[in-house]
Image (tube, rainbow, N blue to C red; front, side):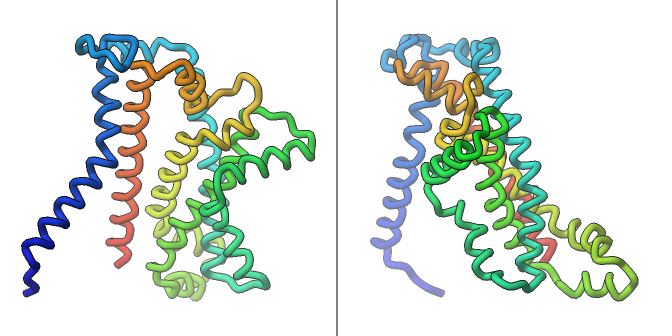
Length: 265
C-alpha cells in the first residue's frame, strides 16, 4: 500500500479546488444573474423566471435557433457517413499516400477556426458561390468529419477484424459484411461522434460568421450581436440553457462511447 504525505494530499486538494473554482465560478455567476429582475446584470433587484419565459417568445432567438439546428443536423448527417467511411478505410485498407491522407484528414482538429473560416470564404468567393445557410453547413462538415472519424477510429481499434473475415468466408459480400457485422459494432462510436460534432457545430460562431449569408444568423451569432450593447439577463438565461444542453449531450455521448468500449472488451 502506498502512503501519501499529508502535506501533498492537502496541496492536491487545494489545487483541485482552485481549478474547479476557476473553471466553474463564471458559469455560476452567469446562472445567478440570469434570474435577476433588473434588465442590467450588475444590479440585483430580485429573483424572477421571466427572462427564461421571454426567450420562447423572441422571434429572432427562435429563428436563429432553427438555423443552428438545421446547420448542425445537416452537417452531422453528412459527417456521420463520410467520417465513418474515412475511419474504416484508414483502418482496414492500404493504399498509396495513406499516411499523408491520414494526417490531412485530422488537420481540422488542430487548425485554428479562423484559418478554416478564411480558407472556406476564399474558396467560396473563388467559385462565386453565394453565401447562405448551406455554405455554413459545408464549412461545418469540414471539421465535423474529422471529429466523427476520430471517435469512430478509436472504436475500430477495439474491434476484432476476424469477424469480418469470418462473414466473408461464410459467403457474405464486402457490403453485407460491413452493414451486418461491422456497422452494428461501430454504432456506439458513430453516435458518440455525431453528438460531439453536433455540440461543436451548434456552438460555433467564428466559422459561421464568415460563411453565413445575409439574414441567416445562427444562435451564437445572434448572441454576439446582442452583447455589443451589454450583457442582459435574457442573454444570460440563453447562455445557461446552451451550457446545460451542451453538457447533457456531451455526457450522453461519453456514456455511449464508454458502454461501447465495455461491450467490445
